[in-house]
Image (cartoon, rainbow, N blue to C red):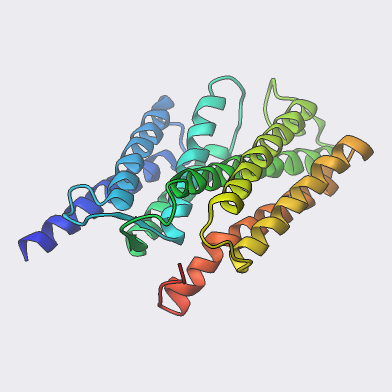
Amino acid sequence: MNSAITTSYALGLPGLLAIAGYGVAALPAELDGRWRVALLVGWLLHAVAIAVDISGFGTGTAGARFGFAPALSVTMWLVIAVYGVESRFVPLPNARRVLACLGALAVALALAYPGDLMPQASSRWAPLHWMLGIASYALFGAAVLHGVLLNRAERLMRAGRAAAAGPGPGLPLLRLERLTFWFVGAGFVVLSAAIVLGALFASPWRWDHKTVLSVLGWAVFASLLAGRQLFGWRGHRATRWLYAGAALLLLAYAGSRFVFEVLLQRAPGA
């Protein structure tokens, strides 16, 4: 009984505090800049919650836990980290409240669905493969965030609201577009490394739903980068390809794990 209570506190307390921090950061008022402190506190507590959730530290449970919700939680933590660094140099208005809400939702999902226990990996390269996969999720997530801001700015421009067309002072459309494709390119490199590593060291290699969707997502991003380079794709055409590739990647792991863990209520095959 005491062990169960300790485990509950170890898993739940950092997550609940992180949700509270993100909640303050999501408030509409600027709070004299204190929202930055709230976002930072929420982000740090989010990191603690991830460490406890994945490692089982302080819960008496050996081995790593992982699933669709922890994967989304780590992804959102990395995206918020990118935003925290980038917002110090370029303005990204309206992104803070959206990211704070998504961060709180990701933590809540990880509390509700902590994933399955994985005592040991099938390969010594498996942890690196997982880390690269999550890192690619985060980079493409940052690209999607910038793509949404880019589409919004273009809509405002077409509506004739030139004063509000840019996503913020000092961040013109072309610069935002370059940032979007920078994240796409970085995510593509990391995803390529994750797929190659999985193909070389997976035991055995299987063409399951996760592999097929990941490769399809990789192909979409490769087409997007090629179209950008060869045909100058930009604007809504480029962001449609970006959203399609991101959706395929989301389905590849988080989506399929959601189906198994929540809808079917059973662990997916190893």
